[in-house]
Amino acid sequence: DSGVTQTPKHLITATGQRVTLRCSPRSGDLSVYWYQQSLDQGLQFLIQYYNGEERAKGNILERFSAQQFPDLHSELNLSSLELGDSALYFCASSDGQGNSPLHFGNGTRLTVT
Amino acid sequence: GESVGLHLPTLSVQEGDNSIINCAYSNSASDYFIWYKQESGKGPQFIIDIRSNMDKRQGQRVTVLLNKTVKHLSLQIAATQPGDSAVYFCAENWSNSGYALNFGKGTSLLVTP
Image (cartoon, each protein chain N blue to C red):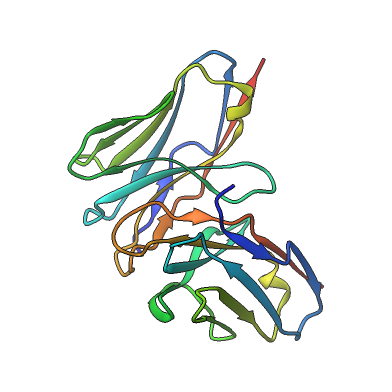
């Protein structure tokens, strides 16, 4: 158990809709990272937050946004969903103080129909 | 853009044999590398990491080798067991990041009895 909690585990929704994925980091970790995993693209870094502030951005679409709250949990918002957004979305956390392993949750499987 | 890649998409080994999974990276500025194991339905699990000031690092049954000259990383698993069957990813610190990781596409390891 990595200590990172993601909810929900599964999400099925229709094109055009909006969903929110939630992540609670490991106790003591200040940094949260969001990744998207699809069959043809592997694990793609989306965005990172550190202690409530955005720190780094990867291949995140403008339709996607995230935030980290004062209690350090994070939410990833996906809007105007398309079929191609179907993927596994992982959250990871670390202390954010330097190069160190990221600890991953078990992901949210999003299916857009 | 620069990326991390893997030489072999699949690897089949017999139980008890040693496994070697290879990875090529292209960003010469990367100074931190990690191997992850991902089992079906789970998030990536940290195995071992290595910094660029080292050539070799050993863990329990695993060894990571780093060759900076040819930008090559390998993961050696000794006495491979059925429980080692999974997808293995190498990752490097992402140059534009606050310690996010850039992942390769993964190698599937299948251990046969």
